[in-house]
Length: 186
Image (cartoon, rainbow, N blue to C red; front, side, top):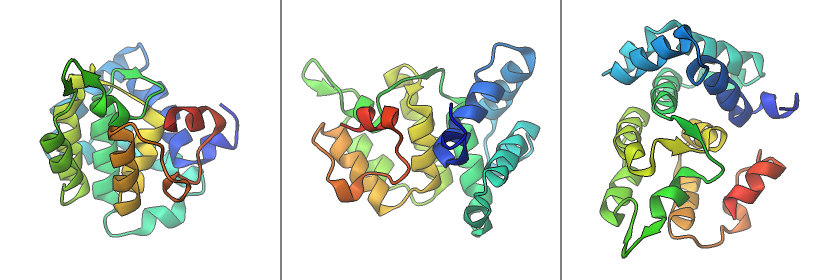
């Protein structure tokens, strides 16, 4: 991972997930278990590993993004959701949810639409964690980290294009997409 890619939310998310959540050691297994059992944002924020994630975001010079009122909720939602991911895949999560299996999509349209209507980051995280097993708990960690961090109408719209497998309009493509991630957006 290049220095510039670690200075984005996507790079920080993947680096934190790889080192603190997906690593094959006791500390990572403990962190995964605690975060998966967490029922509230404060349960998540009471895990030291989440503060490691926060420090990485701040160290990446994303301080201005951490000043919003909803930042703690966003951080908790990101950490809890990423702790539910067991495999980093190239495909964005919305694309995996929309994959046709037989005559149906992996995640039903109604469930996908409900996910998009989540009222806040924590409700979104809960819906995502409940839906991840449908796709084998696999997701593009860097893309998901950035999508959760900047969740809003633009991200929701991009997810709709990905879910239905249609080309994403240039205006909806994320700004910090790396060459590797660019391939996964098509």
